[in-house]
Length: 246
Image (cartoon, rainbow, N blue to C red; front, side, top):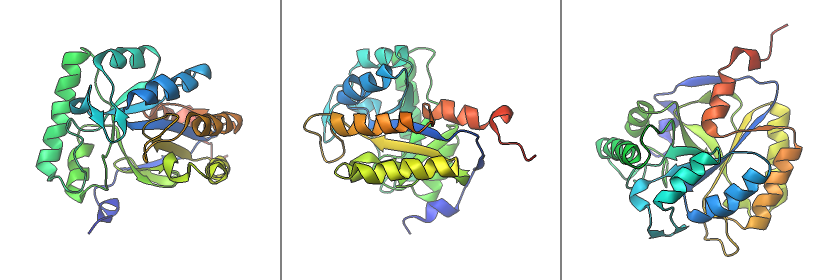
């Protein structure tokens, strides 16, 4: 049953912060996500998380023209995080768990060849919801794994299946996204945004530069701390960042 993975192989994390967190993530890693979206983040001295399938490198995919090898170093030099999205962009539900894990390992091996000394710390499930066993296997390799769900993380989150909000699903309704940022601020939660390409003529899975900048500006103005996924997780695990009980 699809969706059952949410109930199995959980790794609980208490979301307790003085300052709400927001992360901007990009799946597949189209070049426009770095060249346009990354430039906007850089303008505010912020970093995002780019979930790459290295098997797509240099190719044209439904979400646009994918990254090239030079983009990997540029991304890291700009302070962004490089995350794993399997080597073959494997469907999280349709792919058998052992083949899915093999694609994770292949992606890690490919990264070591391209960027010696660099490793993936976080993961995003491609295309669909994961099978329970797929979730279990992915969790072996990463500090956290991100899904979808169109919400933010508050209370107790599952590090093996963090919730995210895909911006393109509301790209004609920015107020809905701004309302979610406000809700996350009040809940002092962790809101993870996700999308794909950022271009003037976006694919169905991306959004326009105007929309993205509008949301980014509102996120900055909300007072949230905006960090790549791995850094946000480190902050949540730092005792000094936890709200005291007194």
